[in-house]
Amino acid sequence: MTVSDASPAASDDGRPAPDPALSPLPPDPAAYDTERSAAARARGLAAPYIPGGRDPDQVHAENEDRRYLKLLLIMVIVIVLAGFVLGFLAALSGLTGLVGDPG
Image (cartoon, rainbow, N blue to C red; front, side, top):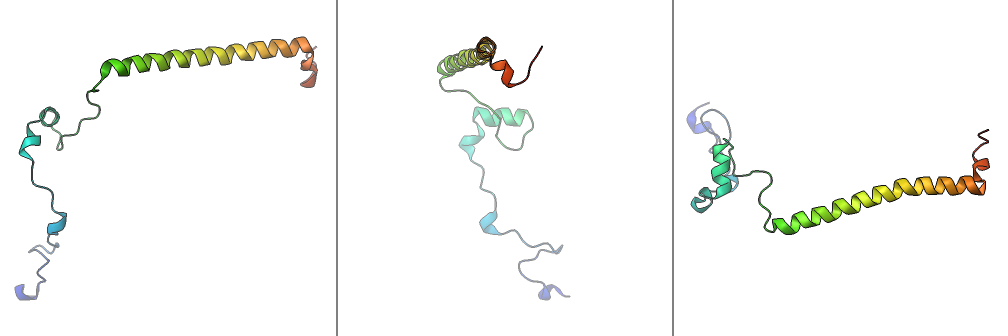
């Protein structure tokens, strides 16, 4: 096989040449100086992606989290107490005979 026989899409080592339509985007100089990019470079990351970030309204988010935590605790307490109350009412009404005689 001679050089003239090689297809124009193949490089010298036999691999296909990269498709220009799929080539990476050129670097964005404005994005290079962003806080996320600087922090990513400091951590040795290849891309300016850092999980998390700053919440634009942190006070509102913390208030909402507190409200949902209170709601969660209230729901757990209600579910546990409802089991005791329903069990007590079932015992008083004689419904324990439906599941077996304990004594």
